Length: 119
Image 1 (cartoon, rainbow, N blue to C red):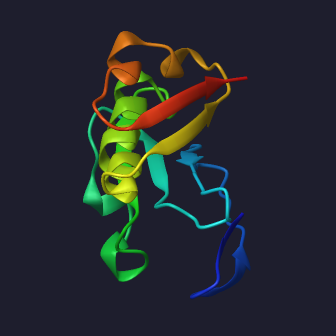
Image 2 (tube, helix red, strand yellow):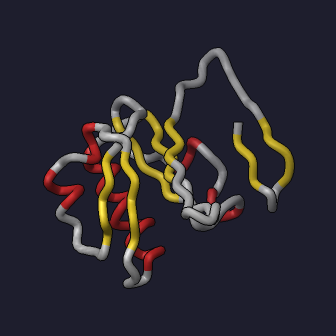
C-alpha cells in the first residue's frame, strides 16, 4: 500500500498478471521522508508502464533490475541521487541493515560526509 498525504488515502492495487516492484524508502530521524525509489522488473525502464510520474510525485526516482529487487548499482544510485543531495554538504548518519548491497566498496566509498552504522 502507498500513502501520500498530499494525494489522499492509501490505495491497494493488484492484478493476476502483475509483477512485483520494490519500493525503497528513507526518512530522517525527525520523520521527514526522502524521495522514494521504485525498482521495476526489467532490462530497461519503459515509460509506457505508468503515467508520467512527475504528475504524481516529481521527486520520486525510478530504476529497474532483472529481478525487481535492489542491487549494488541501485543502492549506489540511491545514495548518490537522493541521500547525498539531501544532506547538502552537511554530515549525515546512515543506519544500515547489513544487506549485501550496503557493504560493497562502491557503496561505502561514495564521497560525502556520511557516517555509516551497520546493525
